[in-house]
Length: 381
Image (cartoon, rainbow, N blue to C red):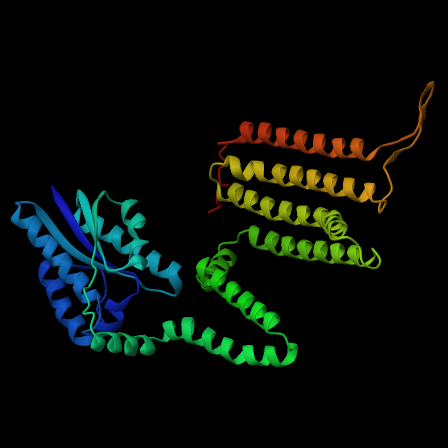
């Protein structure tokens, strides 16, 4: 049994600090890398990760098992570029070494995100996370604080927001003359910042330019439909705001919400339909199998839009803001149908039934077309 012991470095410290290109394979090569990286940055925890990879390889060999140690490192711009670089290096290792399984050695949570990339290409028997022990005396605390202040990313994440809070709080207190309002404003800003970091919105925004560039270069239809969807969403928000401004003075909060929803939901639904249609067209052009989620999404958007429109219209009609739906009289030859006005309940029932019917049609269509393959057109030589 041949085991590949691979040390993962997502941050790209190995090539940036030593100038060596990864992947690096072999006991002697990794031993030399430990010395080069240790001399370049003795405080880097990656040195301990490399030593742990060597130790695991030695233990496997002592147990009469064939083992090869290797190091892969991230490169490129952003997290997507680093992950793709590591994926390509793992493919190269699998081709060169031809192992039966792998043991992944990592040094932190950031590197642990790459384990699925290795698992998709090779059986992973174990994940070995290296935790460096630190002394807990006063001198070490001072040293860690000094290291924290020297880390640019940590300074921007912690010190900059704290400094902004300390500057803005006295200004708000002076302008508002209310301690409660100033504290509430600062708390709201801190909450937004915590959500921004906690939901990894910063990582998404960092990867967004690369994804947009990839979408433009690959000729995806969805990039155009997303812009259309954004424009329709803005139109919907403007229509909702314009409708609420015509309600008069001091309207009820529920009435304002329903009026905004009633006016905005058709445009928002159109935007969602445009976005989902773009994704569906991308799948068809790409020539792959159509997934049920892509097929069912337009119908689900339309069904939800009908139901929300129906409920908001019900509240507005009961409040007298909009008029009831009237069916005009119809006369065809000897057949005559008298006109009638729908009650709010009948109006709501029609919208709900329409939403259910559209949803059922979507399920039927997606089930029928699911798994359909679209072949790419033959290229003319």
